[in-house]
Length: 563
Image 1 (spheres, helix red, strand yellow):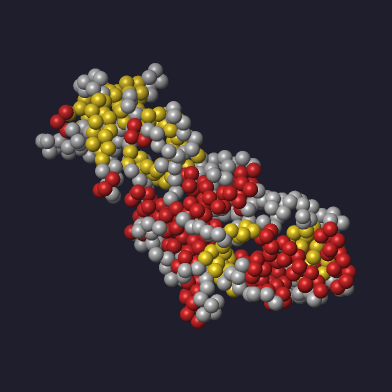
Image 2: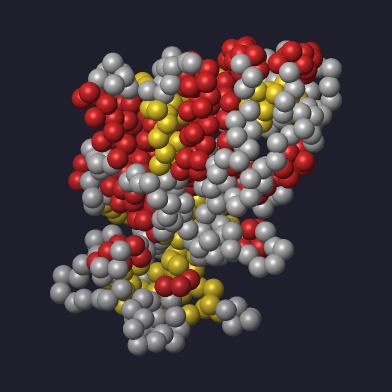
C-alpha cells in the first residue's frame, strides 16, 4: 500500500481481535474469510467487507481465506469466479494458497445433516415452499409445526437418502432443522437446510441433486477451515443464533461470528439481485459499465484501488446502519487522483481559432507541467500552431459582466502559450459561431506579458492539426434519487434511473502526448476533470471515461463545517 493511504481508525472489531490476541483465546491465531457467492460481480459494498476481513488478518499476522459460497448452481458461473479473484487482487489483497469452495465440503455437510436426523434434530418436510412460508408465522405470532415434524428417525433417514438419490422432483421435499416454531427469532423456526435441485454444479457436476442452504453451509465451512473471526455484515446478526446452534448441536469447532454495518451509498444500488436486473434488462452495458458500483465498473471508470481502500478506512466500522454520501467517495477519489494523475489538455466541444498573425506552417513546442502536485513528474512538450481549438463555452459574443473568458475585442491567456485577442467572429448560415479570428502577442510566450499587463482569463487549448481525435463519455449518477429504492405505487427502483447518466461527446480533441495510451491510464484534463482511457479505444480514436469532475462539493462542505 502507498504512503498516501490513511491508517484504519480504531473500531470494535480491531479491539475484539486485539483482546483475543492478548488473552490467547484462539491460541494466537487470526483466521478470517471472505465468502462471496459467485452469482455476480463484486461491488463497492463488498470492497468494505474485503478491506475489513483481509485487513484485520494482515494487521495481526494472520490469514484470510477466499471461500466461494457455491451452493446454488442455478446462479453460479465461472465468469463470476474469475472476476471475483481479479477484483480482490486489484484491490490489493491476496489469499495465497487459501482458496476454498463450499462445494468442497458437500460430503461432510451431508454427513452432518445425517447426524442431526439421527439425533432427532432434523426432519424431512413434504409441505410446499409456500406452505412452509405461511406456517412460519410473523414477528408477532408464532409459527405452526409441520404435520411431518414428528416423523421417526428411520423414516427421515430413508427419505433424506432417497432425496439424495434423486427419487423426488424439485420442490417436493426439504430437510428442516427441528428447533423452535415459537422462537421470537424467525430464523430459528425450523429453517430449511437442504432442498432438492436437479441441476448440474460447475464443480461437482451431477453428483448432487440436493444442495445445502447458506445458513447450514456458512458456520460449518468456517468450522472446517478453523476460522477464528467470522466477520459478516449486519443483516446476518439475526442469523448468528442459528450459526451457533448448528456448531453446538453438531459438537464441532465453533468460530465467533461478528457483524458490522454494510456499506450503503446515496444514488447507488448495492443489491446483487438488482444489479443483475440492470444488466439483464439492458439498462447498462454490462457488469463493468462505468456507471455500475461494481469494482470492475469503477476500475473501468478510472477509480484507483488506493482511493477505494482509503474510503473504506475513512467511513470506519460501526454496528449501526447508515447511508454514506457518495460525495465522500468522490472526494477521496479526487484526493488520490490529484496526486498521481498527469495533466493534459483536451477540448471536449471544439471551437476553431485561427491566429491570423501567426506564421502559417509553423509549429512550436510549449513546455507544460505534468503534475504540479508532483515536482518529479517533470514537463512535456505541447505543440502550438496557427489553428487551434478551444472550448465552445470559453467564448461568448455578448458576455455578461463576470464572464472573463474570450469575447470580441478581449484578450486572454492560452495556458503555457501566448496572449490572444479575438478580432472577428465567423458564423454559419444559421447564425452559429463556427470560428474565431484572433491575433497573438509574440512577447507573451509562456503566458506572461513583459510589460506587466494582466488578463483575467486563462484557457486550455489544443493544436488543430497536431491534436488527436477522441470520444469522451461523461457519467453522472445512475439514479436521480439519493435513495433509489424510494418509489411510488407499483414502480420498482428502475423508475429512478437517470436518463442523463451517460452523455457521449464524439468530436473531442486531446493533445498528442496521450498517443498510444493503454486502457486504464488516468489523466486530469485541465479545467475539465479526471478521465481514464477506456478499453473501447482504437488506433484511430481514443475513448475516455470521465472518472469524476474537478468540482469537489464535499471539500467545500467540510470547509463550511457542514460535514
